[in-house]
Amino acid sequence: MKGLVCLLLLLEAFVCVIQHQVDGGLNENEISQQLRSEDGGQNTPQTDTLRYEASTDSQQNYHLFFTDIHAALRELTATVTEQKTNIRELTATVTEQKTINRELIATVTEQKTINRELIATVTEQKTNIRALETQLREQQTFILEEMNKKDDEISNLTLSQVEELRKENREREIAFSAGLIQSGSDYIGPFTSEITLSYRNVFTNIGNAYNPITGIFTAPLKGAYMFRISVFSHGPTHSAASIFKNGERVVLAYAGQPQSELNSSNGAVLILEVGDVVYVKLWSGTRIYDNDNSHSTFSGFLLFPLREQELCRM
Image (cartoon, rainbow, N blue to C red):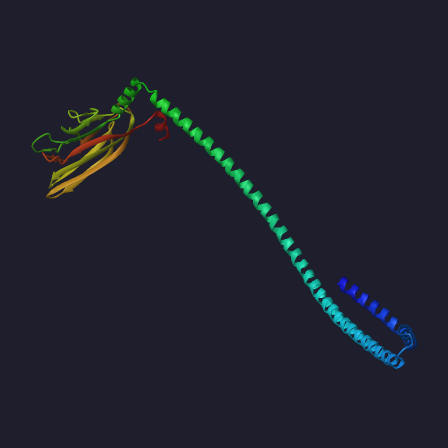
């Protein structure tokens, strides 16, 4: 833009100089005198003709020169005007682009802030994860140490301790079951008073706590025991038998039938001290029947042993 303005100024100055030369230049007399001096005064008619032709050509040349200068100036002026318009458009575009750039810079700055916050959050999470991993490793180490201690304790058990545990377990193996009649078939009863029944057909007597001669079970171990009886007979009759603990009735199995077979059963869980006794009594005025099929039975077994404090809670 500055170059075009300088060019216009130079052209205007040149035009002014040419105009001044034309206005203050040689007149016809000077031209004629110059021609005469050159020709030495000879051929006056030709000189006049030449002087006229020279003057005419000079005027034509000046006119053409000024016409070209004005045309060039107009073109330059139009070009400068167009360049000014282009410059204004470029200026507007640059301004708009600067605004967009500022918005982009603001967006990038905001994004950088968000990225820094995310990086800080991720760093914090990594720190927390490392702390959790450290705690987990410590817990695993502690568990392994405890397991190794337990393994050492188990491996340090002596043969006497193992034997003692076996003995204790054998003492806890208490169970019996027996039928009323050892062989054949028979009725027992009726009697005018209750009698203790002796179940002589022993199926099982682990721990030998049941006496088939007396029909009495004696508790060798403090604990919770399960007992059960079944009674059977033929009508017309009544059959009734009760489980007793240390002389006290606990449960009764009773059945009455005018004809055909009759049966009943009952049971209970009892807490026994060492030496407590359990047995079955037949009611007075009733009878019970049994044969090789063992319809009438008495059974019991240890559910689990009890310690002294457990009995106190109960």
